[in-house]
Image 1: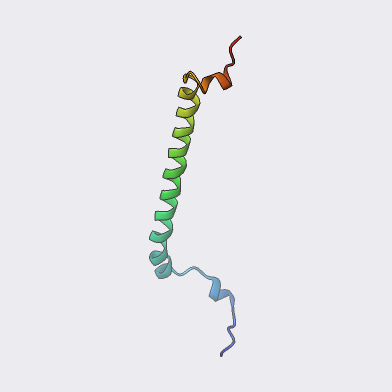
Image 2: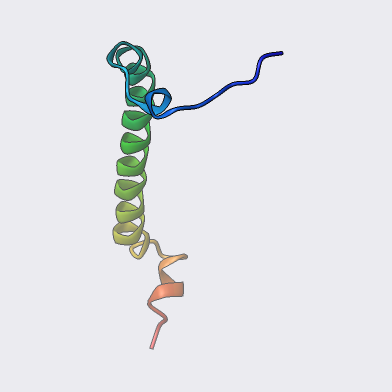
Length: 64
């Protein structure tokens, strides 16, 4: 086995490698963004319309 020696050049960004890996990272990024947006929308709808439920709305707005 050879020993690997790391230099400053080893850590430099290489355009051809970035072009190959960027699509893989972007798909994951867009997937996570869309999931977070969907969860935020669902949570807002639950907060707004959940209080209108006759059973579960009582927990937030107890009767006088």
